[in-house]
Image (tube, rainbow, N blue to C red; front, top):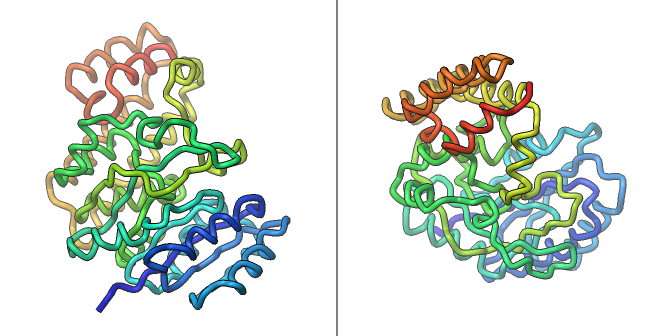
Length: 324
């Protein structure tokens, strides 16, 4: 039997772009069976747009959930995903536009590879009016050839422990991955967490073709962070305490939960997660005085941890110069 496909669409004051996105979902070459909309307390016309577009649409099951109190992006997506009944679930942002074959292309991957738990793709960056910006999402994120190769080769955990390269707006997952990932930890964003769980317990892959127009309009709840020279300089000037505490909390939560994953993560993956936690523990404990940081940082560089669990020399420099 053909897989049943759901769309998990989260909204919050998204009336400006939502109609175009909904029409692109409904206009797919392989139309989804179900759309679950979870609205996080919008005060604009978001829900009116949903009702107007859906009422004029071809027969698709639609469930609209509303949150009296805003849950935030991660918890709202967890609610939408949990309500989906499809075998496969595509995550959907309110302000993008799906290319016509996005669903069909991704479903084909799952159909041909029963072990596949998650697939994500590239996206074309566009401005508020939908005009292409001349870059793709993976280019803007600076995703390396090594990380792409690791994902394709079945070693996505290696790539994801260095940095997140998965964007929820480009993802499709099996429903059992959602159940395996819940509850979503507060320290993690929903897409990063599900990607890590999928990589630790099964097979994931990356489609290096754009299947979405990823709109950048200045009001994105989660958007693209550029890695150009000015962006890198800004990182060096940013205080380190809060960021390192966040990275440590994420690594600690991953290590705690990894031991409970079903199916079990391999011994090598668990060892890698332990090493990631040790690395972030050392980074978080670096002295306030920059000169005193040199010894521990050099040891971390020589051990290879800065390359295994981060951006190599970029993170070395960041740990050396960032203010507390």
